[in-house]
Amino acid sequence: MRVLSLTHGPLVRAELFGDVVRELGHEHVEWELPRQGRPPAGFEAVIVFGGRMNVGEELANPWLHDEYELLRAWVSDGMPLLGVCLGAQTLAHATGAWVGRATQPEIGFHEVELTDEGERDRVVGVLPRRFEALQGHSYAFAVPDGAVELATSPVSPQAYRLGERAWAVQFHPEVRREQVLEWWKDRQELPKPLEELARDLDEKLPNWQERGRTLCRAFLAAAAA
Image (cartoon, rainbow, N blue to C red; front, side):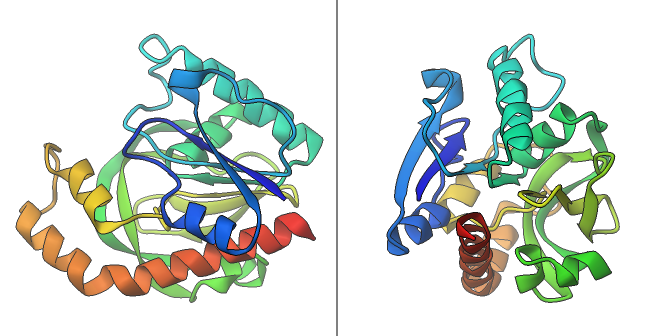
């Protein structure tokens, strides 16, 4: 397959997911929408990653309108699609759901639980019923009309499936340690000192990265089916 990773900046790239795509023998193309404009056609699966910007900040980031149009077209065409963090939020917004500031930020490792539908899902269902997920967001989404909620946290929905070919997760299963520390080093709303968050990463990230690789492989298998 030709797999497109749609990114929004140098610190929010495909990372581990790019590794998995290539390891499985697929062609991987990373495309930074704010800098490069709309990507070319000809892909068989798309993964949309995170970013510092948010839904509602279109005046500062007018390319978001292009992303919404691309997402609607991909969903309409049945393109296998996975949205991660901002990608989950832009997909929700593009398909008519609310996106806005969460009741509280989720930064660091936070507990997530699959729904019954999530346990049965062929992509998200490869994760345990309950797990700690690496988070880095202060915005949240509502599950779009017609979509199925797959995972939740005490703060907000965490995953959904739209139709049979589009998935979205609020957490970050693709990350590397240095990448995450760069996100957090200048952030004002950290739940605890950066040194403590770094220790959490040292303890928990290897297991989380293996779950991320498993999730990516499940998405690619579903996309190829």
